[in-house]
Length: 179
Ligand code: AMP
Image (cartoon, rainbow, N blue to C red; front, side, top):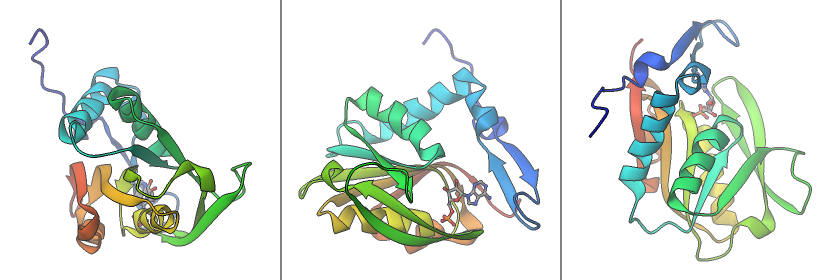
């Protein structure tokens, strides 16, 4: 390997205390994206994990899930599906309500983006309580898709989101615990 320098992905993530409200430690991946080597390493590790697995589509959760999901879909030459916040998609949609760590929301997908028999890998930047990822899985399932896995750059392991979603084969690259 020409470049043997080990990239510390975790070290490229910025933490903003008390944002967007008191008590939240916001894990900011914009600083990771400013580092091309770190971004490439994230996609390399995802590709290594998922290459050769039975996946027919990758679905990214708005908005940071789009960044990592689209890059991985491009690498794996798979279709990319957008799971968007309500009111953003122009064609006919299916919807699912969910709870955030800080509020409630709804996600939508175009009805024709997922077909029965699809094996869908869902991607987001971070899993906290798991509510968002769970809603994404339920949304895909409503359209007849099967969840091939759920992938995150970051897991906030204290909040046990992945534990609640074991049936969807969660995978993460780095975690923050009690930090
Ligand atoms: P949850 O539904 O609780 O698993 O929350 C996950 C979603 O909220 C993801 O889309 C994250 O981008 C965002 N999120 C929740 N908590 C944080 C946090 N502490 N830092 C950054 N993003 C967060």
